[in-house]
Length: 610
Image (tube, rainbow, N blue to C red; front, side, top):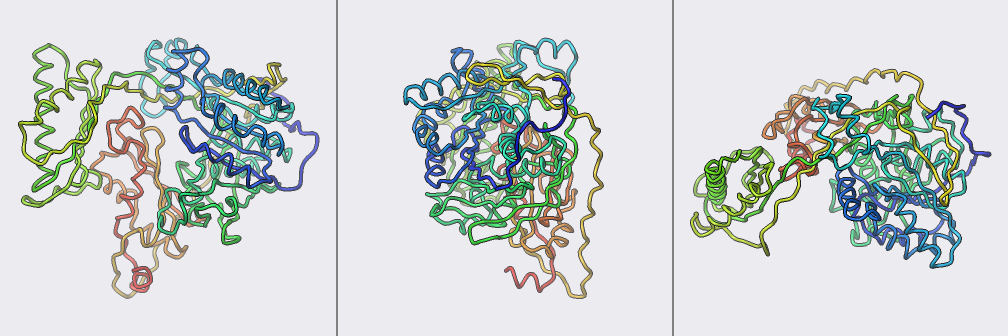
């Protein structure tokens, strides 16, 4: 990359708002979303986020089998293939990271479909994020994992290495005349930021606007998760069968109105949008992206109509000098099985069954001179395994599910546990049931390895219809100054005795993962309740709530703009993602665990919520 004048290349700046639809939150999201959004009409852009760290490793294995694969094939063949004529007629721009580890092949397939339908649409490709060829160089350079400090894995075990690119190359593609832009790995919000920066001609040093545009992208990137999906008050979400995908009307200053197509199901409210705001952002005052360091702590969310909210107040600072890189690598094999147990003392029976199977498998491996399992996980759902409570008392009738999993360097040894589990079926205590149609097979353990590289060491490339597009990346040259954290207000003194209420009566909450870290956002239903919530949810209290998962450091952050707290819990997911043997390796249910927490409040509040 080379430095250049930071003036955006747009020849003119648009003052009228733009409308952006968010059609995909993960590889596997509904293909019906594009048709829904196009039928709603009036969209300038539709964005699609297909990629997670593990998704890239799956795509990498597909590319190993065929050089033409390695991208989200359903995006090309179904999502676009069925909607290209409407896209062309509406002049809606399509921005997607569905290219995975093979964006050129994805674009080639799309061009085939365009030609077959005799349409005039131009396809651009952004590459440069794929650093797999440098695996040996990273190993020799002594690169270490940015969180754990682990050494870089052996090059032959590495499946994928991808840097998170920003919005700038996507803007270059749009300015060159692209109707459809296909990328590999980029920041989830970068596609939306690119649409905004291109439409409004934002300067790459206009950090507040860049942060605001990134926030819009963050709200759209998980699709229906902002329109009622995974909402704490799920009973309030109407007609989920026809849930609407989100639409952002973005203004020139970066603020936006969040809504959904008219007549669709779902819910757009302060609560649903606030939950997505706090989702997986870590420190809200330093949410690091390739184009900007975002500060979302003072963002406000206000109801505008019964089906839309207005979001504003994002601030920004210079982007970090480094880009995050995610590598995935093979670390042995795992096996897992779910076994229901019903009857008296079912939890105890399930635990004995698991211990017997593990003991027999370990005995066989010892006789063969093989090492034991590197990791074992036994969780009994229904007997307190997820909430950390003690098992129920003896003589209690229960319905539980045993989840047992193990990891081993050898595929055959991993499969040995399943053989022993099956072999004990007629020898253990009664109450075990089965539902599986066949034995599961050992699967590869794919671990995430994150590290940083200088922005200047990564060279994004842009092409339009196979021809290179001149592009020079603006590299961050300013040090990112820290922002002083706002102090959480203390609970006021009261004369009356306090009452205990569960957190769910006082707050919304949502959780997710960042590698092996859990992120839990808690939003007070009323601003005046936040001090009481904060008093109950200290860092120590949250660590205690998840003590059964052996957490590392707990950090608490305050978002005064939407009266929320955000918690980041280190080393609590058993490695996270596919590397984890846990029942919940992505912390999706951690908010539900925390919502059980008791909060001391004045009787006036307790009477209001109970």
